[in-house]
Length: 102
Image 1 (cartoon, rainbow, N blue to C red):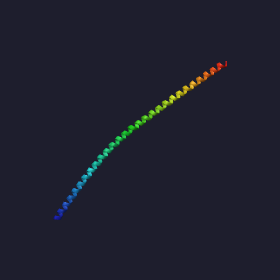
Image 2: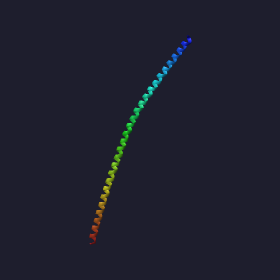
Image 3: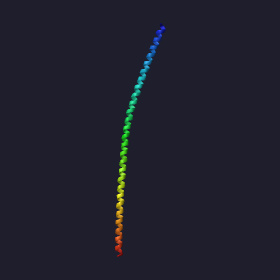
Image 4: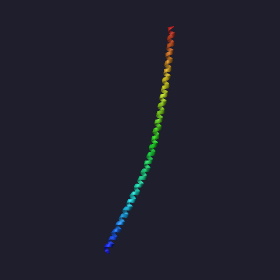
């Protein structure tokens, strides 16, 4: 009878140990789930920040392109103005040359 009682006691101890291990595994699992959720939030925040920075870069690139276009347009206007002045100067010189030859 003592052996059956000992076996029951031993099995009860094993069940208690298994129950304790199960509780520990559940705690670890919950901790990992919590960490995973925190990492997911951090990832989402980082992705949102990245999108904002990409939008800033896009705006900056658009601003640079617009400034480049404006600069090229103004440069072309100045070149045309210079050519017009040069042509007017040339005509004036020709007119003076003709007057001097008379």
